[in-house]
Image (tube, rainbow, N blue to C red; front, side):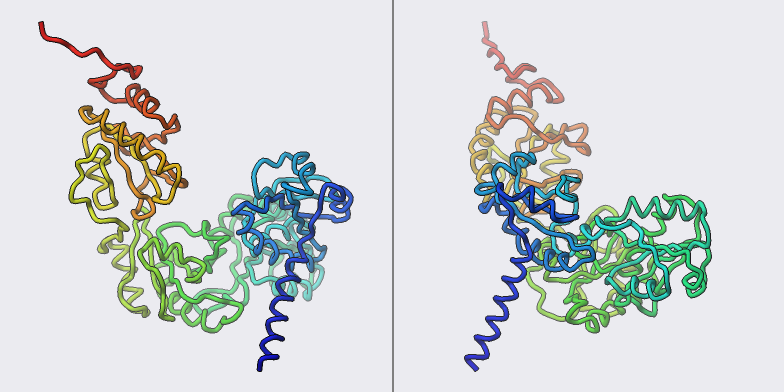
Length: 492
């Protein structure tokens, strides 16, 4: 038994190292000669201490394992910008880590603009080689193309040259990094499909179901924009498989069922629940979007709804409406419960979920504390111009700013100005405030709270005072418009 465990561990470690070995490492001494050996190469310029690089490294290795077997093969390369690759990184204008660039036959071709996870890297890079639309010369070619990837395929069938074919090929060039395209002009292929001048979107085998057709035929005109709209509308079907690299495809209003979605290890179990979602989705397809997502991949989204861990196999259903408000289906999953939840959501009968700290019992300090539950009161409807800081408790820059904000609050105590702070990690941030880093500051004038302005000025007290004095709706009592203190009036 002990030897068996050792054997399994050896296999595991060998597999890990094999993946690492699929990523080539070049240095200043050999970069130009070795990158020229590859028709297409993706190069990651990195620094060993970089957190984002460490996060990307295993995804990059997984992608390399797949792409090295591609026809033609695509090389994934890494260059250490802190040691043996310094000159190469400088030559190619690397100023941040990781930086990814695509090279063709040794020459820089373009910046990499794709996803940063294995599946997305593979899909993006496969689209970089060969024609944007693969020509199919036999029925076997068509069948092989449709089965080659677990992804949507869009195929054009053209008996002769036409405006539709021209528009199709033009769109293939535009969307080659996102969609698999192929076309055929061969009679047996056209006869097999029963289309002489048309476009068909084929759904992958693992997503076939009884609630929608396995393929959809385009019925619009020879216009690239119309074909693209057709693809966008039908690409994910009634219930799409929402993943890290395609999550932005799914627009609100959206209902997502989170569970153990895994089409590699458990396709039957995955479709058991998806089919139940499909039955409901078919009834509401014109009013709301549906998707399924792997709960482990989207734990951060579950956290946004106050859900730390999903123990049961049944899906957890979460939703966002057109206003981006959040909703939780509280009843255990069933077809009836999901249908009722969707109907109530569309009818506006549900109470939105709001992640919020408790409202402070005492909020009389120099800086007012905002939480999600009192945000309207202390920010949007306070009748004052407002400078608000969105912070994170662990943020070093936020900690440095705290005493500055306290001093600013004291200076603005008798003014028609509110100085506010909010922990954006413990509270939902309402639109239109957009927080992507910490600290993020906004200025919200009292007469236009619906269009706050991001504060990009200095972080010292005087910087804030001058900004507020200049932009205040009414001139401050203690400062002129330039931020200079006004002389105190004395009685005669």
